[in-house]
Length: 358
Image 1 (spheres, one colour):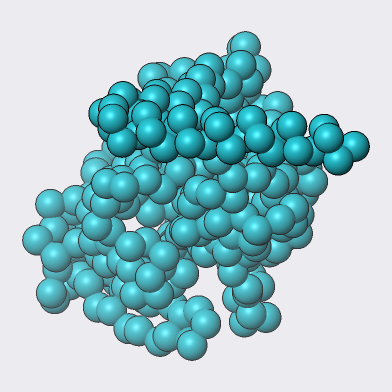
Image 2 (spheres, rainbow, N blue to C red; image 1 turned 180 degrees about the horizontal axis):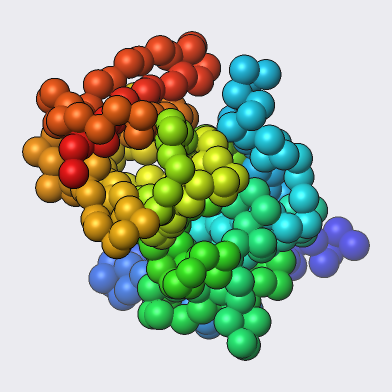
């Protein structure tokens, strides 16, 4: 063993002396050998190919939407009877956007009559905006087309009517863009059709900056976007009254007809981008014409639509119009005398009109 060790040591010494001598005589050659060796060991790994199954960043969670309703007081019960109860006749329209730099991108929309099925998958790395509209008992007033689809306010931005199927449609190509204004396709009035101020109860709500952190529930608070109208004829014994409100269905009253008491109308909201119809003080000045057609066919305009000071209707305020037939005289101030009483929750306004002399 000692002989082998001496032999190995002898040749190792020779190799070392030769390398040293070579380095002294040919330093550039030795440096080239070192560079080539380093390059061989530092050869980069090949670039990875495209992911065969790419996935967006973030985790997806399933959220259930709950639609909450603005509370009502007992004072308001006559104006809001049966409107707080969840019913299978209720209609819910929901539009969802993804909040992106510079604006909003359509994400999903859906039409529902079963809130338990209002489920949607959202990405935890994104933020979302929800807009919801609720019509209590809406199926009794907004009828589907022959194909079973619904139009305004549920029509999409490409003019397509929407199917009531209790599911969200995921799409970035179109929106349910009618939810932001009052126009509604009514079937419960004559003539049926679109009305900018439909005689129907409605709630509306917006929820912004939603970022899901796990499966759960999100709540969208909706508020009433309505006003009330009461027509109170005093001493009305002949002919008929025709009430024409801008953007609303025309209706008539005859002696003995059921009273028009706290009839609900949805606001038109002419400028959705700037009009905050969820504000407690939101109001619209609305031209109204009231015409009395006497038994002999004579027409008497009691209130003209061209009145320079149209009546103002405020959110959740009922306006009563008293029409006095007991004294035919020319009223002062164009026959308009307004009394106002506002409850912290709900209020009323009264306009008194006298029938002008024929």
